[in-house]
Image (cartoon, rainbow, N blue to C red; front, top):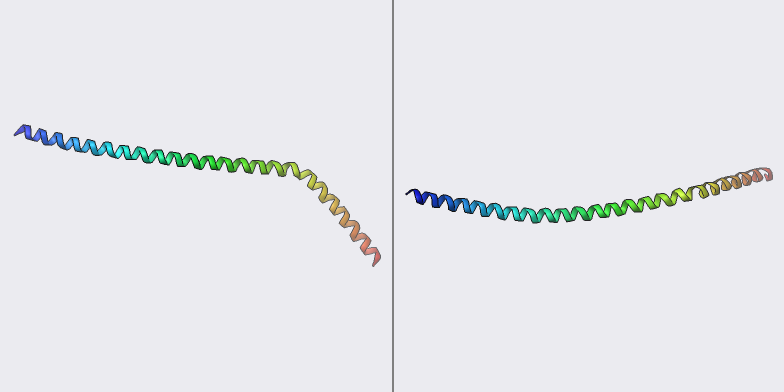
Length: 88
């Protein structure tokens, strides 16, 4: 009688172990897929950050010439407004 219970216990433990191993394998596969997705997302975010940095550098380099053009445009507008007032 005792050996029957040991056999049943061994079968139950074997089934539980096999279920546990299958679940761990499935979990490992899912975690690998999630890791790859996270890597792809971080690579894309890094590319976007680099692009934004390049755009910022462009505007930083273009700001002084644009400021000079704005000053010249303001001077021209002021002269045009003065000459327009004198002719009236």
